[in-house]
Image 1 (cartoon, helix red, strand yellow):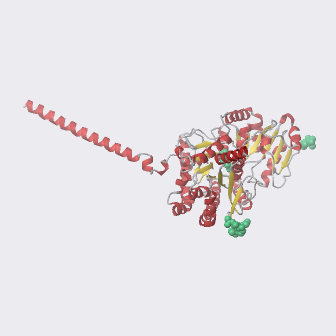
Image 2: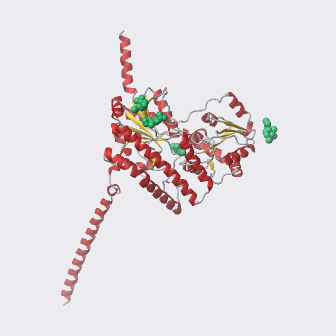
Length: 522
Ligand SMILES: *[C@@H]1O[C@H](CO)[C@@H](O)[C@H](O)[C@H]1NC(C)=O
Ligand SMILES: *[C@@H]1O[C@H](CO)[C@@H](O)[C@H](O)[C@H]1NC(C)=O
Ligand SMILES: *[C@@H]1O[C@H](CO)[C@@H](O)[C@H](O)[C@H]1NC(C)=O
Ligand SMILES: *[C@@H]1O[C@H](CO)[C@@H](O)[C@H](O)[C@H]1NC(C)=O
């Protein structure tokens, strides 16, 4: 009896210390695929997870063994149909030509779509805040923290409204790349995403970097500020960036095998590769296909979860190029079957990407530049041929290209010949594979695994109810204070005053000396 009670008490005690309640506010689509990896790990450690989702969500299931869900009766309009048509229109615009005009149209099209997503998000936030019953239930649930992806504003605002500690799973914020929101980012050696530059910039490249920075600021001024600004003012009376910058921990989905060296902050935790796992054996039929490639090896191709199909003429070209190679090809392809598919190519609706990349027979990965793709390629040391389609995928590839581990194609001009020669270059030039394996070694050589590190910091925030000692309040300063312009002006004034006094004293003394010597002479 007594030992049982003791055990019970002990279990209660352990439960109180080790398991927390976490409210997860994800971003739908591919971002959720990443977030889900964290949710499953947190669940396996005994934490109790609640996921907030709109009722028409595309990826976030209502029922799961890993979390409870709270469904908001709101149509967020982020679904396969809308997203698919947006992707198709961006791809066809990019295919139409590489002129400045076409590039601008792609930018404008993308911006308008994002504006639409932000507007619906804002409407959803208002609905949540005004739903007294829902807010009450959040309050009563007694969460320990909010975990969110700040690419959209919902989680950040909700955390402040509920007065809860905040942990971010971040690559993008409302104002661009994550670091930019809290860490100093000198434009002389921190390349702005989209500019496709490195940390070593010539004079003209620095001009380009600054122009891209101004363009980003312009987007913020027209798309983000006018929409999030008034809402946040109304509920919190501050600027929305202040809510974001008050986050306790920033779990960055990147590290310095991918990112160029740059200033960082004590509450930024790098967890790139947290989703990577050692590969498992392939299903027998796939294993047989991969083995049949023999010494030539296998090429794996997938363009991610968001984009099912490419324009037909392009898939025809790609299939024809593959058919000319001695390698075997495993291609995740969901659209119409190209007529040019060779007998060395296996088309699949879905493929075990991680297990294929970890297979010793895999020589090359053709990818579009989404997180999991590039990260898993780095983890397994497989060189890349890139076919970036939209958003930050171009920038992602420009970073790995700078390391010499990827050959990147331009969607506007790619055809059968350029695709084939890119494949052959990566297959036959050993430097791609060597450099990728070196990058992989660097990425894996860490004292603690990225997932363990992420878990440690989430639990740290729960144990200590936040991490204010890791965060500066520098964002609350005005520009004048931040750059010490007031101090510089004050010191300058003192210096001028000193000079003025010295000069007049000297002149005064000089005159006296001259007067005296004149008097002597007379
Ligand atoms: C989601 O909720 C909204 C608002 O109540 C409703 O109009 C819409 O039909 C719902 N959608 C789904 C898929 O249930
Ligand atoms: C959403 O609507 C359904 C059915 O109309 C209802 O059962 C559910 O409680 C509503 N959820 C919220 C959070 O209001
Ligand atoms: C595959 O196609 C090539 C060229 O078209 C041909 O030489 C080869 O015999 C074919 N292999 C199989 C297994 O059908
Ligand atoms: C680009 O890479 C970053 C970091 O690895 C990742 O978070 C992001 O999702 C990637 N972009 C796309 C479009 O997948």
